[in-house]
Image (cartoon, rainbow, N blue to C red; front, side, top):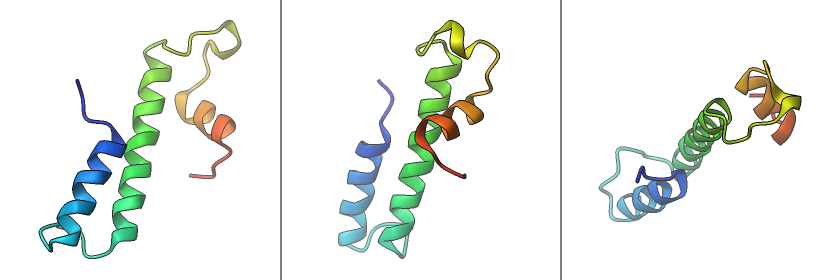
Length: 72
């Protein structure tokens, strides 16, 4: 099973606490984890796991931004 964004964040924060992370700021880890989660959600949408007639032809980026009210 593919690692989730939350699992990745947990591991990376543990490394950060021990000075073994490539990141120098914990907030950068959070930003990266959010990006990963967004990508996973959009992939799930594209793969049809959110299949609905209401979403036919809707680009995943548009769906994500509308659903989660983001401007990214």
